[in-house]
Image 1 (cartoon, rainbow, N blue to C red):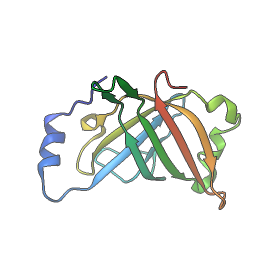
Image 2: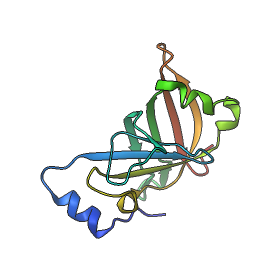
Image 3: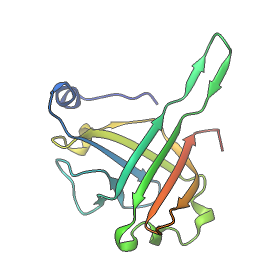
Length: 141
């Protein structure tokens, strides 16, 4: 799946003053985790996400090599929202994660979706409050 944008997204992206928002959706989980508020945000979105690091797949035709894309996201787990999803930590491995990017002025329908990733590791920081989710492109489990 290639990343596409709407005309509303393109208009907002062209502005000199904008506030970016990242959202992840974990397959089978009703809660979306977000870095900030946006146009049509509702109670299914929790502003707990920080430190989003995304790297798309890379193909080097000269060297005939391919690297899978990766995603690393930190979730600050206030209220145990994420902890409560981890009844079976092993079951979360291989679960699909969808990454979206947009701006505060946009509704979710205008956010751009990145290619799907799959969780391969979840770590808990020493403070027992921040989870780090590591995901990769399909086929790299």
